[in-house]
Amino acid sequence: MIVKEGIARISVPDSYSRKGPGTRSAGFYNSAQHINRDLTIMALSVLKPKNYLDGFGATGVRAVRVVAELGIQSSISEINPASLRIIRENLEANKVSATIYGEPFQSVVLKGLYEFIDIDPYGSAVPYLDAGLAAVKNGGYLGITATDLSVLTGSVPSKTRRRYGAFIANDDHRHEAGIRLMLADVVRRAATMDRYVTPILSFWHGHFYRIIVRVRNGSQKADRSLDLISTMNFREMYSDFYEDIDQGPVWKGDIEDASIISKFLENPPEHVSATSVDFASRLAGENASFMFYEMADAARSLGVNLPRVNELVDYLSETGSRAYRTHFSTTGIKFTGSWQQFIDAFLSVSGHA
Image (cartoon, rainbow, N blue to C red; front, side, top):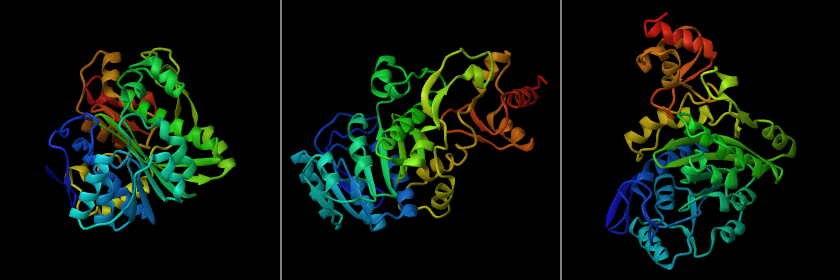
């Protein structure tokens, strides 16, 4: 079967997953990750690395698009012989070339200094992070996709503790908490190598998280990055409505580079979908606060109905603070003010002031 994604036309198994992660197979293709690949193309159009490694080729769709749409020199790692045949067919069909390695990811990253390494395995990315962080060029980028959301969101506490050494409450804040837990893990791993990371892009969509980070050498800045990892307690942060529970450790720094997002939104690559551009535009305010204010929690704590989200955002913005909708929750707001200011505005907008 042939599917069109971006400028590419890709041969995929007839049984490919049209929704969700699907089942691992030769030439594995997950159509739900289209938006992941679109936003990667958008980021790459601004970051402009000299070379790109698709660490887990499957159909080769990532590298095919990177070469065809951006002209960036690319390599592909894949160990499944049947997938390697599909990758070669897809490169030929799209009249593009890339270096193909029929070897494990951990071996391929040692072959040269890549400026962008993409880690998007079937399953957890954890086993591959150290190899990627060690091998990426100083000042280069690591793109990481995680599909172990049940672990990152704390719905399987024993696995969260075992895999990430953390506790996350599986509540309405779980997806931002999961992203921040993922970033904390990457920051700590980089620090053991005297390297530090700067988040470029972080988002949740459906069944996966996606982060892109810049990796640089520097022990002092690695130390400072570790200072931005600690636990969080919503009762201490917000109000007595929340349980007195320490969550994390999580990353408390910025989760994106707003200037890069602004650049690729100003001039998005031609072949990314309008849906992906619209989604990317919703990420612009995620640095406004550490964690978001959840309107549903405010309504429950006050015993009142929810006002319109956009109306509350507008009201908060008029107070002189910055307020944005967050993509982590349909009723969540990123806000630079205090919880009490948020509650006062909430009551005013809902007619209970």
